Length: 567
Image 1 (cartoon, rainbow, N blue to C red):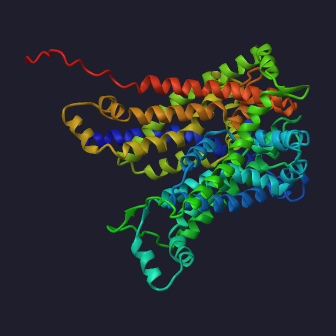
Image 2 (cartoon, helix red, strand yellow):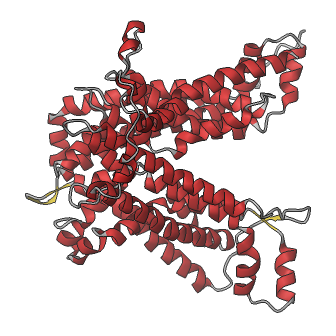
Image 3 (tube, rainbow, N blue to C red):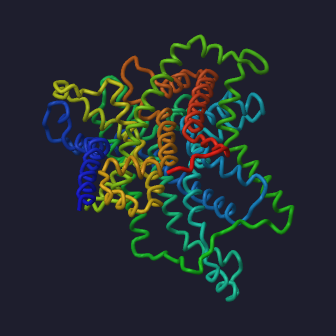
């Protein structure tokens, strides 16, 4: 009875926190369209004709068209590419195969604006491709809609890769064998048997790619330095940094951005609603990659993999490193950009210190909130667990620019000043927004680990008189130590380079590392921006490595000398 009671108390508390951090800012964006000015002391019915102005105003319409084009194109190509690579990786083993797995995760954790900046440095009119390789055609290939779809495809395919690769973990050979006995070729078997069974994974991967693409702020922010390609996220950002501030424009464009994501989720639900895909049974076996019969085939796959990784990893990340070590006024390699970075050490130090402090605070607070969200989802009998699960995922789907606008509406209220809660224009609003962005990742990591801890352990501790917090601190936390560290570090690393939120919410004269890098890039200081990226990223990786080593140290082996055996 007590465990049920505490589960409900925790559930209501978690639901209230998630509502405040995620659902309320999102609702504020929608309310602003219906009641413009309501958050600034003016109550009036909105002019809903503004929603149709998106089809009459050239910039608004171009932003919508570009986002839809980029989203649909990237979804198609990234899903096909990720699914093909996942099928290849799960079927065959070859040299350098592990590099593909590592590269997929590297692309996932690297901020999109850093990847995009690498492509700009490589393909711009005076970029690395032209100056060092003589590929003048690269500029025309990349800086046009199809080229941007190609860049996004090579950045977003890991989302589809992981969903399909996970679905291929188990197989039921009797379906394949039955199809082959009926005369089906390997291609026919894959097309008519395996592919239909993988549809949920393909739909999920496609939805993730679409949501991540249409809400991406890093690509348009980086591309804007050399190519005009407005999208909904970037136009929302521009509306907040023009004079006068265009809250009406930001609200309308945010509405359509949320609408696109809602349509994508609805399409997936409708596509899978009346279909059954459960096929695992007692005859299912774990899939194992086979070695190709011909050695030449294995080497061919290895060569293709190396060439592919040279493009998807070597160009964006290699360009950042290369540009940081070269200069347009000097031949060969130089440390000029790092020297300038040290001369401007106050700017770098301020931005890096602010980003690390905000990320550390947000990571710790999000870890506590995410832990209790996972607890409610795993162990409690809270009646609104499904709502908690959905809300905890909303910030993963909603772009950071939309969430940032919602935070402006909520935390920029004059009456909050009486309670000391006027957070807009202070670093605390960045902390709250970073917490909201980190909760989905932390919750998923901890939920997976909690699923391995049986509820009987908590019940046994309760029977021995342990209270709720004591059960948490003495049973769950020690068993989940590794997952807690991994979740916290993942949230910390992602928050440091969150460009969308910090670009919208950073207070005056309060620079953060992503803003420092992006401003240098907008000023066409490519080498300086690359040096700041390498320096800041290297320091963040070092911090993560040190914390990992500190908390994952193995205990020293016990001495084999005399032991006290008295009781």
